[in-house]
Length: 229
Image 1 (cartoon, helix red, strand yellow):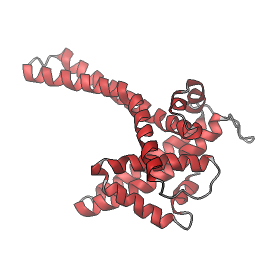
Image 2 (tube, helix red, strand yellow; image 1 turned 180 degrees about the vertical axis):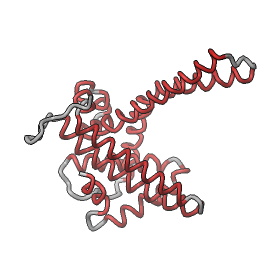
Image 3 (tube, rainbow, N blue to C red; image 1 turned 45 degrees about the vertical axis):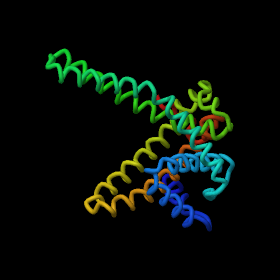
Image 4 (cartoon, rainbow, N blue to C red; image 1 turned 90 degrees about the vertical axis):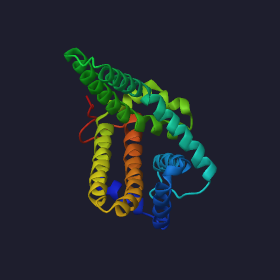
């Protein structure tokens, strides 16, 4: 699974051009619009893998990419609302306490608890969002991203949990590499844009396969389905 995911973004005759375009869009992400195009491409990857395509899709039909990207962003935002609110409330309360000089042991404990809770909620959101977007990509409906029956089956499946952890490791490794290269700022910025795109495509490949296996309830005959919790 790991090797397939790593190799997937560079498979196909158009892989180099696709990575080039994706990296350039990453470099231009400060303009906002490219962010939605990249999110839309991730949705396209999910659909392509779910359709059984062996090579990555290509860029094109930019309007569709942009719309899909907007929808994926909206889905992610909905799932991120609760951790955002908790984080904002905790940060706001901490700032008020610091400015007013009312830094009591209770206030410090409350701030620590709030930040810890926000961290846990963010982690949960990051776990749910890929499955939700994969469900949207599969059905073509935003409502599918909130289908609790499907999401419950996927999120509690060990195959999805494993794929999510592998993808998370990909992002961590990429972050470390970019961090090291950032000692030379232009190099870290440029390499980071291309590496982030490459990892995002590999991660989408993992999410799509895990979503398909878990959502249809396939059980590997050798081991059986392993629950995530």
